[in-house]
Length: 246
Image (cartoon, rainbow, N blue to C red; front, side, top):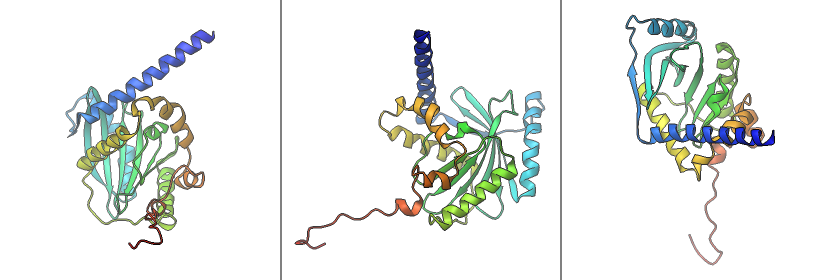
């Protein structure tokens, strides 16, 4: 029995390493493409747009304007993304359908940009917490929330980052398509900068995302898991000896 469990554990480790490495290498080769998705009258398109409709209604009722639908191609993988930009603030609502054959399965992100490359993303699936994020890119995930609940928790942590962390909202237009691709590549570059990143996938999958799941940015900070923007800036300059002048 122990031998079987050992083999299964080793197989799971290898599968996660291969999957994480494949996706990361694909991004590194810049094999990520986004193209507008149009209704071509197919059954697949009808299912995707039908699954998107509740999110479109919620977005319009909460100050978001439709930014478009896109087909994302990353190597052999495909995803359908619908996006909305808030009319008064640098905030995005994104709905992901993965795989395309089951549009009801997917995830939702709400993301806000702040000044100095600070950002906050709230998602409703645990898998969104798998990859580590670059410094100042804050991520929280809560499975099973309604859109109203996810939005409420997102706004609450926006206030926390500003009131406690010193973050500042920016006023600018959001280019969703280019911004999405740039964000994916920036995250990929950060992951590949980590020592032995290709062996860390199992820890991220089995431990990291479970530790972060259902923890707000406030809770992550109070537990010492992250630093806030104003703490990251608090790097003291090196001290010179008393007999030297700056």
